[in-house]
Length: 354
Image 1 (cartoon, rainbow, N blue to C red):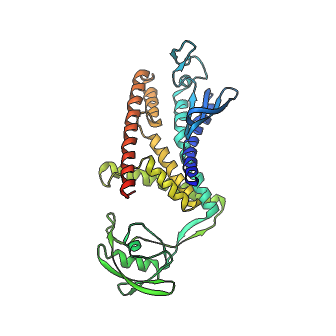
Image 2: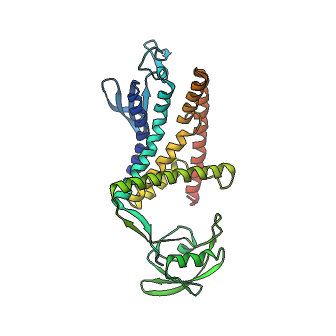
């Protein structure tokens, strides 16, 4: 039950913040908002404001904003019609830069959400700082250290007979032995034992690894400093995601895509490991969602921005039917991609690799 709530909250927050960005900027630009919905599918409850209908729908995994004049409406005769181009409240009657600001506001709000979530983590839990002791803080699943029975809190006294009193000494001794046997003297609850472990090789650096991480301490910080660290964290993750994506496209690194099943698993695991990890992981997902929507993929915000940019350069909009057809093809592509990665996620789940 707790896991289900954590997943629904994460998905709901990510998409609702995105749609809230569209809603706020549309209102600021004088565009009439017909509906603001939480969730998808059949409407459960709702009420009508001054001009906007607010609704709660059956599937609580997102939401949407319906803007007057952006899409065709059904009139009393059942015909599909667009809002009059002379109507000042119509989306399509606004200047190109105004419409672009409305479209871009959704992804930008996702980046703002990430900054805010990281700020909460830093302000409330503190800034994580790795210690330089020889104490194991955590283990990486499936790596040699875990298989050998090393546990968090154990001290690694020496590597191949060389004393390792600091984490720096420890990692240096292991890094120089990729894919080789090393003898670790491990102290557990005051008792020492020798373990022979074969290291793995880091494909990026070539260093030897056994799958251990240092102890982490949390240092409290002010709200202002937390905001600065939150911004820096968002910038760093954004850069990392873009660099990784570029490496995947150029073939420098293996392309690995995670679908809804993998995301649900990751959200569940982060929720189990504590609030700081849960909120931080939602922040990372929010950055990914914001960046994804800025890519010029048909049916996403990025493609709308490209069409508006072309309209601004040409001085007239592209053919609406052609735009709709391109968006339809993009939607089909995204659905096929989601089905493919979901299928791979399920295979990994049942094979025990996920």
